[in-house]
Image 1 (cartoon, rainbow, N blue to C red):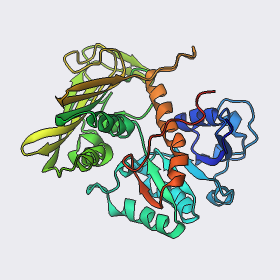
Image 2: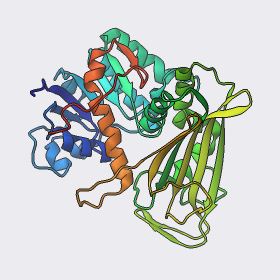
Image 3: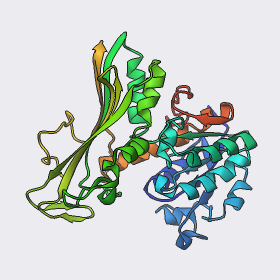
Image 4: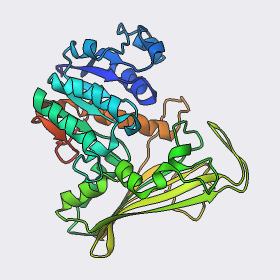
Length: 359
């Protein structure tokens, strides 16, 4: 079956962007027409060279205007986190004002843009850009994102009653090279206060799917609370980023909890370790490195999902999860193109089955 290709521009050639670009160049459904980068050293280089591929005939640029002029069907944006909100809004807003839909993983509070904790300065310019251009924007991720919105919401639809729902990330970060020191305090002394330990920041950065699930279930939460625990390693622990010295934090556990009538009815949980033997009393999956959903109800349901590379590359489960995150945004492009202008969340999308993936 032939498919009309969707012409896409990708912004970002980091871990996620590079892996997704490798998938796009093999796809029968998507055509890569442009790539945007922030690093001046990448400007003017063939994108294949940047991503470790054969040349693909597309040259990286930092010019938003050049990319908008390509008139793609969508921008697929794998830019930096909300720490760089102004630049993310500048780039995505330009495409939206030009009438080009955006699917992104960058601004995780936008997973549920109506969350009251999100600053208006992060929402209003994008709302205005969608109106001006008649375009749509969908933001996803893994956690926050599909592991704690699509997965639990789908399973809740199999229940007559849900007393509580918990979505957990249970990962070993030994081989993970992303940022976790200042954000989570991993590798820091126990007395160090990481950014996410501050309840307001944790809820804003990670908690968007709590009010989303509540909205989907037709309830209004009384409160959203958090917990934070640390585990200091008694021995040195090697990681992909160096050694965590004995006495420093090598595991963290946090929760974000939606409270209704004095009960925690919706919970997001993270347990991130350096080494599977770290914090052995904390939750773990039935296999290593999983995302888990536990529903207590009628019926009660438990589901674990793991992401793996089976291509012999030796890449870690955390990196496989990053690829899945990027492809959730890419594969949503046709559905987002078909939706009315404005904000799009997981609740607005139809089933996204991955057209063209079986070949």
